[in-house]
Length: 515
Image (cartoon, rainbow, N blue to C red; front, side):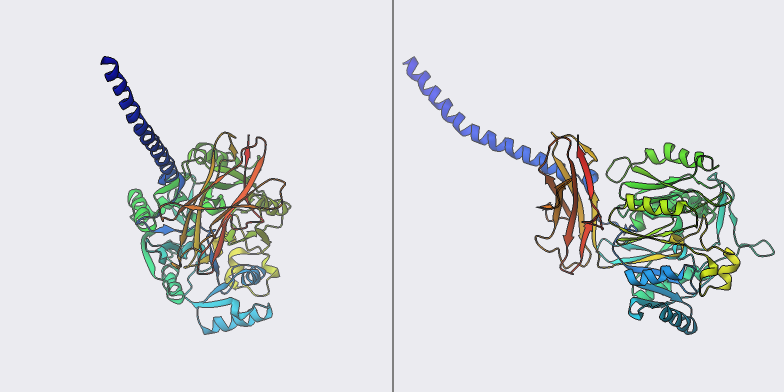
């Protein structure tokens, strides 16, 4: 009897176990799948999420063309190239100025359909369209607006210390600051001409001293805080308004780098993408060499990208072009797949162009000298200010140009794979893709391309979308030691826009090595 009862209980236990085991397996698989999902959807470490924030665009994002001012403050050959490569936007004051520009553009072979004239008043800083001109901001609803910072005083300079007293380039005979209300109001005319709504920023936001990654991080030297303090805007208010109005929640304020000057960061460094910085490198015997190096070692190396990783810091060698003045090769502009670089008629020019090609593979890199004597038309104002050469160490090509961004752009933010990976680890690339045209992404056109170095053809993996969001990822199924993998991603929207990261793909691409 007892044996019969035990046998019955044993059979019951087996039956229960046969039910539990599959359930247990399902639970285990469910937990595992959830853990993978949590890993891929880690908002902070893998993706950019705009949510209810405005998004200040990065320089390298899709642009329609470039804005300059007439009378020209840049070499005419640069203007010709800007019109050929994309579209030119020329700011003029009146009909007489427009007719004069049209006549010269015709002589230079500029196609009228490749240029748009914008009427706007011009003050004493008109050629510094970078400094007074507007940046582009996308609202949470996907509408592009122009951000208009205050540009009142012309032009603050200071020493190395962040709390040094400000002085100004333009003063009256009675030692009063010459203000620049005319240039400050010019952005309104730009917005009206382009039919783009403006955001009035209640703080100073000098363009040459503001660089951003499009993912909520920005860089400036500390003179900008000093300028705002002079304008009665505290540091806390400045940072708070940047976050609320521009979506900049990680503002990296670094030290001034000039013994005495305007301290604009675009003459010191350049953001190449979300995680790479290109920093000028003076000769070792130059007085600024230890100052630059100290900023790198004690400030830049301690900063983290939006993905929580330290920045990759690359160097761009520069040298003297006039006494102790350094050639400002970082003062270049990136427009879509082309980089325009100022040249200073020194032997380092060619090396600077080559370095730009190395750090931005696949991009077209063009250099421009600016001897005023060689220009067919130049204003007397330019001649009086710059004497004989149009570029200088604190004011070059980037300072005098501004992108006009594409309001219907297809935006791609990318978290790249680490440059050196373990063969036992799965490797993922993460992308944020936002179609600002709102027409939707083309199905089957969001793709990850990869190959082993040495191969000519690309293998294609569809990007996986997460929960109908703007977030995508892909896994590379390859893990052989010692191999280098090359890759890029591409996306297309129903608006007809096709974008890649890097923008120069497939001529340019990212890579990592399996150790």
